[in-house]
Amino acid sequence: MLCKNAGMFLKVLRFGGKRGSSIFGLLVLYLLVSVVYYHLPWKIRFPIHQKAPQLNRALSLSGFKVMEGWDQLALFGKDAKVEVDGGARGDWVYAGYPEQEGFKLIGRTKQLDNRGYVVGYSESKKNPLWVSYRVFNVPQLNSGKRPAGFKVDSRTRAEVRDDDYTNSGYDRGHMAPNYAIATRYGEEGQRETFLMSNVIPQTPSVNQGIWKDLEMTVAKRYGRYFSEVWVITGPVFEEPVEKLASGVPIPSSYYKIIADENNGELRVLAFLVENDCPPYTRIRKRLVSVDQIEVLTGLDFFPDLPEEMQLQLESDPAGRLWPWIRPMLRYHMRGKTN
Image 1 (tube, rainbow, N blue to C red):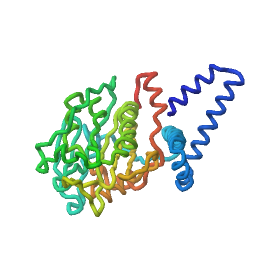
Image 2: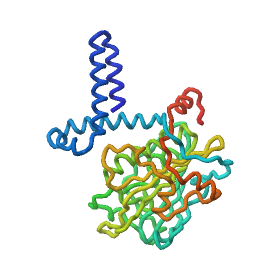
Image 3: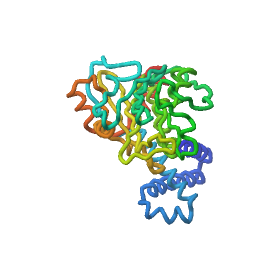
Image 4: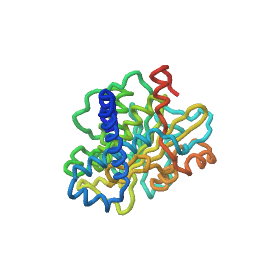
């Protein structure tokens, strides 16, 4: 939507004079109204949603895009970060694979190594409890054709099948995403993301909306303009746990932790997205502390870091997304990342 509005703005400039100024003024007014409308309580917007659903959608979407663009600028807010010596980098994980603090809570996991990512798989939950991968800069973001379907992972006893999700109302939600892995690890790496050990039940609105947007931000921006980032992602199960008809447990929410180490500092973003997350939700509003995710999952992240360093890094949530505009300009103008 912002791109379309930018295109409209350029057309307005060609008009020149009073007519162009009037059109530009109307455009600015529309954007201001949409932002105000976006922030109105649902009880006020609901009658408009009922009587004029297309108007409600247009205003809500425009307001959301404007605020999302503002969040991406990240002009204000603190980072969750700590000084490090740079010795904790790994091919798929930063500062060690997640360690389990409560087997009774989540059951034991089995580590499954793949070309582009690593899985901590739970046979009892029939889900990956964590998936870890690294996204790094490449000259071109080339992705092959999406594989036709998902395959059983014969390394698991659960052997969850593609059909176990059919007509369930839930998407087969990639944890290691197809696009990010395909553009970094090629065709074979892409095929491995279609193993059912890399999949959780995910609500379509989240999988195809806020979650996909976050994955693409990591793949197209953070992983390029910051040289490399590490991601740990997975489900959260809170009682009572519902199941698909096939017996696969359904997560109550989904987490994603992103780590970036540069110039002697490690910073993290931690997100927690509920499975019924409303449409047009800004991802910045789902920032949480790493500690909160640890409590919900029974996992210990970055276990190789000293305890005091973990406490400093994980206790408070970041107050903003990572600003990427300046790194992008440097990347395209000078061919350099951070």
